Image (cartoon, rainbow, N blue to C red):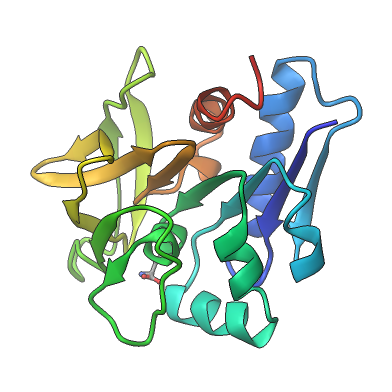
Length: 196
Ligand code: GLN
């Protein structure tokens, strides 16, 4: 069966668990699959995919070390899926020294990039791979300030890059897990070859 771990140190964990379960259900392959709260380094290697949720990236970064998960995460051979604070964690550089990113995706990221007045907003975004726009919820969202050659831009919001893909991995500035629309979770599972 398919095994998906949602990094459960802090943040929107249960929403991603529901979203992945729904995505697998809708493909008729939830039988024998496991979507679980990932807290232990020894459970990392056996996952097909790991999701890093939104929350507070400084806190998640600190807890990765506190729980002794950094090396196993860096060595993980499967696919990473990241949203909001998770995008900050997967980056190769961040504009905040309190975050020690994993360097999984070759992007540099700015935290809380949409300013205070717009702390939270919702806007339809066109995403490469989806045939109609996605209602994207931005909550103190990061943006991609620069991306390496191997990185594909999946979505922009105004002038900003808000979704990227590198190999099997994907990262989104916004929150696809709270829209009640699981097309992005499915897109990720297809892109990484986990579902047909
Ligand atoms: N601003 C947060 C951070 O950089 C992310 C916010 C979120 O995940 N909703 O940690």
